[in-house]
Image 1 (tube, rainbow, N blue to C red):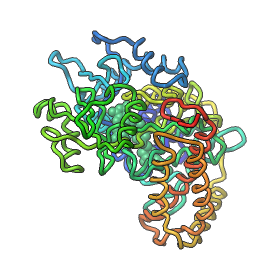
Image 2: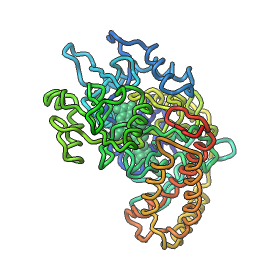
Image 3: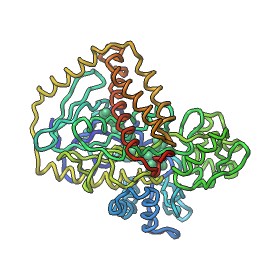
Image 4: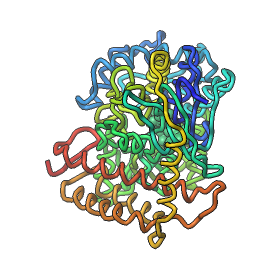
Length: 507
Ligand SMILES: Cc1cc2nc3c(=O)[nH]c(=O)nc-3n(C[C@H](O)[C@H](O)[C@H](O)COP(=O)(O)OP(=O)(O)OC[C@H]3O[C@@H](n4cnc5c(N)ncnc54)[C@H](O)[C@@H]3O)c2cc1C
């Protein structure tokens, strides 16, 4: 059935735009490759930025200033102003729909300081902020009766002469191609940090699918070289220990027990300081012991649980071993100030989009904010667009085309194990397209990716079943990731000077 607004992705960005398109009168459908509640947004811990009316030590101007500084001159001032000015209203809305923010003794929404911020600005729900936001949004979407199609994998965006007309997806449950017509499509498919495989804090689903599919249909993507490395992931598992741990007073120490950086500097600076220490042979630790057990259990309960579970360390009385890993992708689908891409009727929002508010380095707490502020405007703009435009598509022709494409993949040999290639690429990217970059190493990585790409037809799937064939889906994700890898390296080579998260030592 045709929808007015079709949204691909059910993380924070997708759900917020769905709600606002619905409030604006549109018939909305959401498609996601997993279940909405598994979207990566649920992993966000530290908080969401806003200068609230009761703030004593902070102003919206400071929020704008900090965001622009962290972005290293690559953000659009007007967009940043819009983001920061809309922030108080965004929090008010989340509060009104039932997000359980932590509170001060006076009953105000509690706020903490994150890196690069001049004040205590991040509103939080203990260290489960993303989870609480995502679940509340999901409740609202269900209450509004918005249709959600789970376990559908985006294959292609279908366009007509004058703009978007729908998408093709693969039903993961039965491996059948489905075509959905829509007057407006919103991509909300998240970022691409999973190209770093095990060296990322990100969930398994952040394979950059939406961006890769968009690139294949001629959508412009920008700033793809900017990948933010989070300073504090657990050493063995790369699970994130939130910046809020440092925001609440945690220190970074080397093996000699020395502090070596300003823990609350922007993430790119702290990640580089840690990288330098590691290269000198130091082990690096996060120390929150002095915060005390009751404070940790009240304000940072998840950080304690994660340390115990994944590192067998109790941060109440032990140092937490950490390392920096890939965390957030600033690059993505270029959109204008209405969240519209270069294809009419195709919108993008969230981590897959580039609204030019993060530039070369995102400020902690601004991503969740972006989902709420731009999610609203994207939902409204897409629904307005759909009122005035409607393209038709030939469903059976599109189905045949996609079936042929899938059959071709099924015919690939499987002499080379693509899972091993994926793991190899993760390490390759961590070492050669990571925190510190040189032309020589980028070129080496480029050659290796080119070689791997040429061998894709030798890397098919073993599992030929039709029911929940995750082997097949992971192969489709792998193909998307290779396309993303190519563009990330290409962009990194083009930018010959250091800027924020892109640090060239050979400039
Ligand atoms: C551990 C961690 C902690 C973080 N903490 C914070 C924080 O404290 N504050 C902050 O501001 N930011 C934080 N971030 C960043 C922030 O959480 C993300 O940038 C944000 O949640 C991304 O939201 P999204 O809706 O754009 O994408 P996601 O939440 O990643 O959702 C993407 C959706 O797209 C769907 N999808 C993807 N590909 C396809 C496909 N091919 N077909 C169909 N559907 C598809 C997925 O199933 C999913 O539903 C954190 C990130 C991580 C990893």
